[in-house]
Image (cartoon, rainbow, N blue to C red):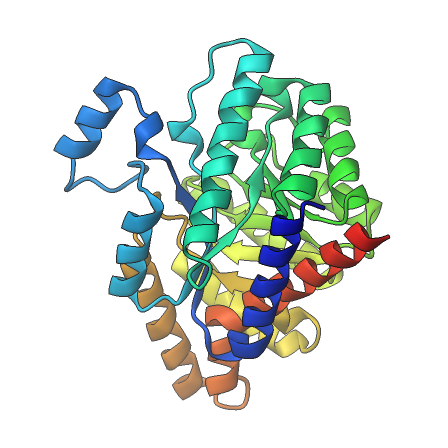
Amino acid sequence: MDGAAAAALAALANRLEADGAHLVIDADTHISDLRSLSEGERRRHDADAGYYHGRPVSAEELIEEMDLAGVDMALVWQNPSATAYCGNPVRNTEALAAANGYVCAAARRHPARLIPAGWVDPQACGLENTLRLVDILVGELGFFMVKLNPAQNRFMMDSPDALAVVDRIVERGAVPAFHFGADTPYTPAGALRAIAERHPEQPVVAVHMGGGGASYTDAERLYLEARALGLERPNVRYALSTRRDAHTESDLIAYQRAGEPFRRNLFCASDAPYGRMAWNFGGFRAMLHSLEAARPELFDGAAAANYLGGNCARFAAESCRRLLDAACR
């Protein structure tokens, strides 16, 4: 592993191990290099300051939102809506590599606030380009987690190419992550199960836990399947972004009842800028406060602190250490 990447990874692990129990962490956010936007996109960005959903935000703009929301750290990856593809796999790979590079540089600028993670797309970039990009993201940039988005990029979560990418991520010592929602047919529960069972000793992160922008009725089945699968497979971790509040509360109760290790596998998240961080974390705090009052036998201040950030901190620190150990072998 690149020396600077290893040093940054070790520093991140040290920070999370030392302070993680007290940190509030948003486990799903997206940042963009605004200089990479086209002139027209930049004009729209500047003109639409009052519009938030999906609007590209820089690392510094995200940190302003974190300060407003009382969030100490955020896990950040690129914003796919701000990464322009042209139909050529090589150029698409270059664009995605640049977007990942911005995430890495932003985290190096703000190491106490940002937790960097990678992003790949075998559909737009081709399998061989994607495997090489995984090597760069993990080996050169030091990303402990790499995400795929089957929904937006239109490929099955457990397709042969997707599984080959998962295998490469795990082989390099990193954690695979996926958009996992009912907004498209590309991320069914059976596919997540196949990935979790393929690498049963390795964590896999499923972002949105079955939500992801689907309608209430369309998401109902996947919400329930996601909960059942997560309570069966302890290596499945969920980021609770872009989903219904009633299901989130039910999931928190179910996971807290299940005890260890399951109660450590859910992370509060906003999906900023697709969700407003201040609104989401205000809601998470209020929900956890109400659960402490209504179910004191299950919820206390320690439980709330775990869901608001402690769980994510512990997971990220362990993943950083695992990656550093793999790089030394």
